[in-house]
Image 1 (cartoon, rainbow, N blue to C red):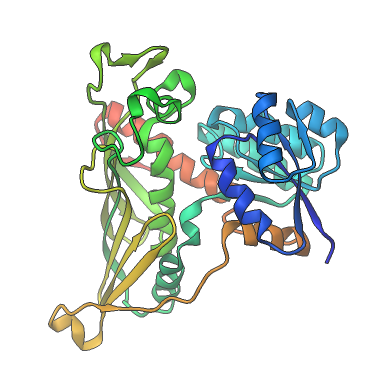
Image 2: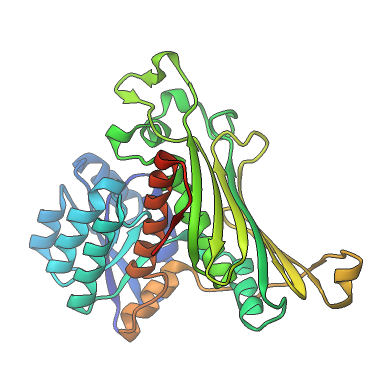
Length: 351
């Protein structure tokens, strides 16, 4: 198969993972890196033995020697840079969230679909073997009709020093400030857990009620140029399209949790319990006669392709991969409604 030539756009911390994952895929080569911080782009290119680096996207597009791009720029920059790439006929794997609101995400989706380009979003927990296996079991009817769902994404970097001191690290500080493009825990990790829930259950959210909370974290809730004005914890109550109810929680104040996604799916004839962290996941099931003794058993899950592997496969086949832009736009619509629900203090239908 023809070699796929990839540009990495944005060379911050997440770009390190993209370099590692793409470099391990056959018939795929990272040929260039671009960043508005030209020195960082050069250093990144040298570290990963990438032959070209550019000071911005315009320069990279003027060169043009790539087939597709990984857009690892800050959230607020996804819209203009992705539209530039699409206009130039380049396929795109975009970091999450696709955009900062549903309107912009839909604009990007429609542009990519009109152009007939491969478009995917790096919802990383689709890489979890357990969620893929759980979805297959739900769709096969192994637990019967889904009736109740419990889910959470719990982090503790605002209370623990496992990742370092957030007070002095811009990697964390920008995530607390709307002026720096953050939508808080809801935009940062809410997109993961909402996708995790709806993908794993194979159900759409029909209605939701959300409460968002900002806690004091520093004098005046500001550190230097970072005014900490975005949500730290979110609690959602949801109703699914089949009538099932559920709760979805997310927080950076979840002391005792490093980076845990939890999903329990209760069905009429069985239940599934999924846990995932960055690189590992587990699946437990309560099925058959075990439902009468509440006995849970570990399920072995076969490996699943990563998002990077699915992206390269889509480039090679010409058939778009999943999760695509439209899927990310649908999740963004749910996140946008959470802000409205919190402001209005009521449950809202999603359609």
